[in-house]
Image (cartoon, rainbow, N blue to C red; front, side, top):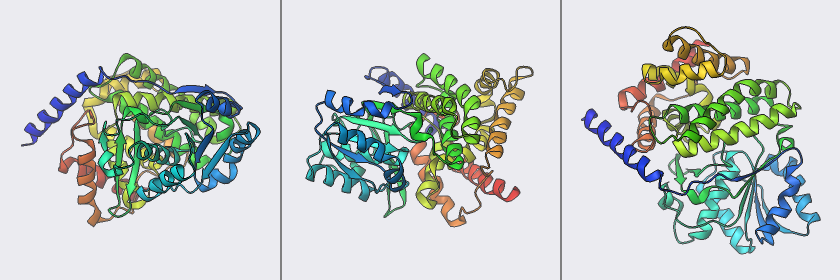
Length: 406
């Protein structure tokens, strides 16, 4: 039965790959450089938006959003502020944003923050154009189907890549289940990559979100299909830039070159995985977010080297090439170079105080984690190795065991 399932999944992915090449993929228009948030009023006027919904979380709403609100005030543009997006945004939060948008007659969105505000705003925008369709009915591939209002994404972390992606990940708090809406219409119109918006990001969050970007790039790169020449190139560039600049940004938040390059790397990694997909790292990480509210970047950082080791020979060639591109190791066999690349990921995690595992995973939750991870990954994700229940459980137990070693 396992062989039949694997063949069915690979058949689906091969067919989807053909269909995906017929779709109209696009990247957001990047607006880059220090002070680039000052260009937002001009972008809104270009899109004929007279009143905009600003979506963010409480901390960014206090500390960073006022910079943009001041620009809107100076330009005489009206706005409605929603600054209550939580980590792992919920269905209830998305519906509140949608109602407020309609009640205050807004005409577009600005999302400020990490993946949570961006995903919440995307999902709310989807509900604006599909008011009679619940979020759960739009979960999965290409179920939004309508153009969104003008959407400007302003990342305040360099990692989620949400400013480039087709996805919005939302949590149903009643079931503790995360699910993703994935539709080309969810790609923002503009991505404003202003390093000043990341200057005050704490080292801990800089590290986790940076490793999130690395996970996006690596998982996209090792997918067995869906990739294009462009996505492969952008993934390679993102991995190299993250290896070069992430720890600099971690050590010195005022290093604007490092902050700028990390935003660009996150943008590239975001497009790479939007086009090529992710894999089992993300599928398992999402279960930790839903059950334990584990920050997504932190979950990815911990799980990435464990899953890469588990994939073994299936990814050795590509990881060996990344080892060479990043300067981690040039000589030796493919297996040796791949191991060196994984070891360097572990070393980066260690230098940035990221744990090696999670010891809070409950035994009774493991079957549900397996159910959710396999349902998310299969058949859509073009993973290098298709997991069955036994292999998925092995990885989850390794995550627990690694925490107990430290």
